[in-house]
Amino acid sequence: MKKFVFLIKLSLDSIRDTKRIIKYFNLINLNGYGIILKFFVIRFFYSIESIRSKQKILLTNKIEKNFFLTEERFDVDKISKEIDNRGYSEILKIQDSFIENFKNHIFQSKNIDVKIEGIEKSKILKSEKEAISDYFLRLKKLKVSRLTGTINLNENSLLKDFLLSDSLVNLAKSYLNTKDFSINASFFISNPLQIPKKEKYKNAQYFHWDNDFKKFFKLYIYLNDVDESNGPHIFIPRTHKKKLPDHKLCRLYSDSDIYSSYEESKKFIGKAGTLFFADSYGIHKGEAPQLNSRLLLNVHFGKGKILYNKDDLYFNEE
Image (tube, rainbow, N blue to C red; front, side):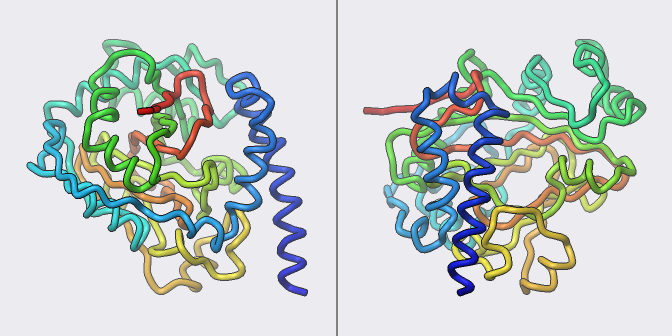
């Protein structure tokens, strides 16, 4: 009986989410009408752990050099196995010389979204000469708790070069076990403001899990220092493979529920340039900032072709 009730709830959730997300991201214009069935299949069938877990990683025996990183070697198999085993990788670091370029590039984006009504986009774009600290302060005065924007990956940039470097392309091939995948790059500015639960809900600052592709992983890069005070990313280990029965629906969950249900949690803190990979089918959240703002670059690598934005990139080696 419990399994039957779960499948009914999953069916209703899948229909609701397919309608909502296809409309919100205008997916038909970007992908054609076939996206309706494709997306429903993902939301329903690939919410079921036993189906998703049939997709195995492909070990490549490749160790790459990546001049963007402080580490001399990028061991594709090691990182792929880390994500596969516990849901996330060890922390790596972008070289300091590239951090400023990445920040300057993302602030050129005009494709932004603010999770609050009544504010004109033109008034919240960062001006060219405005210091980032002043920009964060201005956003806080405007009561903007979170601002998001997508980055155009169809234009040449150092960031695009990094995302299409041999290291990351081979990691995508290994973890997704495919030669074709979609890439979306977005940035998030989260500010320390007292906000109602409804706004926190919109900001995805409750525990949740994602289900956007049959298989996918995300790259997170902190572009300013992140400690306990400004919204570290938190991941519940191994929930990308197995969740408790109460958390198998793609919804938001309270801190008390998650922390009382699982023995471990991984909190990512680090200096600007800190990066890590995670399979966000696992339970995770971004902590709400308490004292300082957080600037985060979030990149997804998804199996197959699903474009969520006109700025997305589809990689197909064949």
